[in-house]
Amino acid sequence: MARTRSTLASVETLSAGAARRIALGAQGFARPRPTGRVDRRHVRRLFGDVGVVQIDSVNVVVRSQELPLWARLGHHDREVLPAMAADNELFEYWGHMASLIPVEHQPLYRWRMERAHREAWPSLVRMNKEQPGYLEAIYDEVADRGPLRVSELADPGAKQGPWWGWSHGKEALEYLFYSGRISARRLPNFERVYDVTERIIPPAVMAQPTPSDDDAKRELLVLAARSLGVATAKDLCDYPRIKPTASRHLIDDLVEDGRLAPVDVDSWDERAYLDPAALRPRRVSACALLSPFDSLVWYRERTERIFDFHYRIEIYTPAPKRIYGYYVLPFLLGERLVARVDVKADRKTRCLIVPGAFAEPGCANSSVAAALAGELHAMAAWLGLDAVTVGKRGDLAPLVRREPHT
Image (cartoon, rainbow, N blue to C red):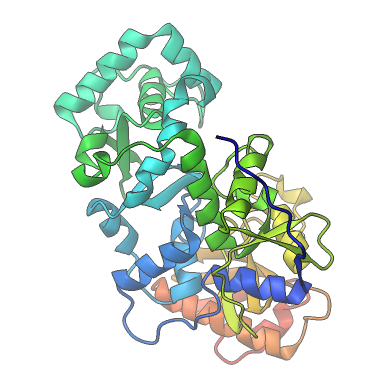
């Protein structure tokens, strides 16, 4: 039955500052870091805030998925995420890119699994069409002998090129992973170990009914709104990677049901939507270095709109063309992104190396430098490093070098 759309008499207008504070509060930055021992309860609350944590193989400082925990929780046991995955509290799937996701949300992604035959990467779709027998043989092998790494397959096939040139065995496993028939956990070297889904996802979750595509997407959009606080339609759709063109009616449904509230935000060109339960902090006093893949900044268009912070990762940019450095972390202080810092953990010398530190306009001052130096020193201690060495690049670097603990 078609829904009846109501006409709203008035739409609330938020200042840009209020929207920024709501966004920070939704991401968990309105709370101070825990002062005592961090345990799984803190991590579960973090996942309640951010919904998913993006996984990435980059290990310049630490595996990228560890940095969102550092930013919000500070010093914590670095084995907590693998332990929670091993205990089936978290599972890996294509949420916002490759992500760790609370296992109870697995039914919300089954629509994506069911579309693997046409929406997975072209090479995987092609394998499903051209080599279904090989796919089934790989599945049967995992079912009989799993968990398995690619190299442990009886017929993994030859690698088809350098770096990202997957073997046929890897392609088969990745198709089965995308389609939800098998799942995976990560080894310490970041390699996936595959097993049938029924041995990774708890039976109580597997037994849950599969929602319709629209119902699942609506719930994912609601979760996105909870994690974003206030967001445009494109922001909401980017979070779980749902196509915006096919989602307009879903957002209208959520507005009609009172699960999203339309708002206007000063200086935003598009209509925004507010989580009705969103915190509205009067001030935010955060201090955190952020992963390039942190959910606060992963959608660059939103980052620029909210923080006036133009940010691009330069790992894949040739060195002579880099502006700020290889692995540059935004620095959040209070309610603003005030700087960007090129950072590398040198495990041989047990040193956190900072080749450059660059302030945003008006932020090259002693208070920003002191806060950044403190954060760098704390991060080094968390990583088991003995020192912080700050280089010469950037207008903030000399101020940070003068701070006593660096």
